[in-house]
Image (cartoon, rainbow, N blue to C red; front, side, top):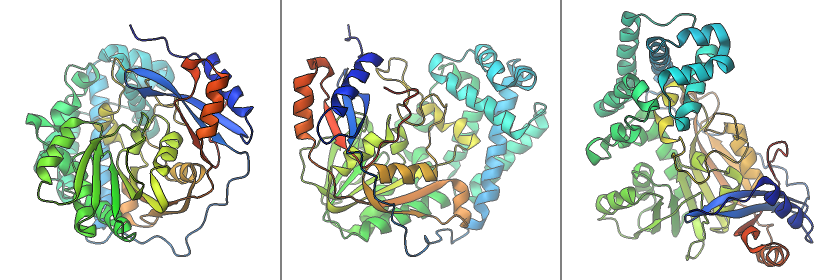
Length: 448
């Protein structure tokens, strides 16, 4: 039987002990996974004002060449199809009226009950209701209207360069919403049909948006002329491929939390010298028995961090002096994502630590926005933060950005704090890790 998790009072005790140590001006305490158990993790700052974020001397480059002018209209068509599919699903289950008449908060539980949604997916149903309310959809769509929207979705998919397999995935997901929320089928079974990764590659590589973003990330990595690169959450290797083409032969550590992706990558990149492979979980202790890296790359993965600030600080500690983090992140929760990929982001039914522990806690959202990522990077001790595409770039309609940031240098070794905390606390509350950061982004109203 698993040990009982530390309580809120326990975590408050840890915070008070840490804030009483010399040089600590503030602390935030949270739980992380450590094998099958939970462990205490902490962020501490010295209380000094963080350095002013540096402003790039030149505006970010426009990425959206080569047909990117179609992106806003295509994404609008795809989102509309998803919204109508959501409305149709709720109407079929007899819960659309609850949304219109009672509003989001009152109708959410009734809608989830009518759908038979399992507990771990109910947050997605709440997102659907909020989306319907925000779009002011007064009546459910007719079948001909929904059919037209699905055809428009496929036409938009083709204009954006998504392969046919990705079109089949979108259509299957939107037609399977009731079964998905009931966990009768999983999104993984649709995205990785037959155990292959070709459909997922269509999402992360084989389309106009991903090609631009992966190229920009690869250029940002190559600009550092790195000898050692760590990729976190490398998944199907879509960004890996672009980076390897840009940097040539380097010491490249490809990591993911899933052995499935590691095995697929070993086969796919067998001809590339310099690649090594390891399992790495961004929500567990991230110490690696490795020399520091010149660049850490994280494409479409850090939104899975239970606490973004803690994960960014842990990554910073893996960087060599002068090293850089390059990340690709979605910053907008499109309706199509809420009706498809969000099912990958629900906590497992047996999750040890479900839900987020940072600014997203209790908000039914997955993605930080562009300004929040910039703020999180600065607080975690990064400098020279740059973001692309530019706001006026048509590619910005996708809500996906490439962030590049350099490691800051003013962070003391947390080892003495770990030792002092262990002396002052019961063994089960002694922090497994402490990260020193420039500032804490915390709301004491719902955190220890």
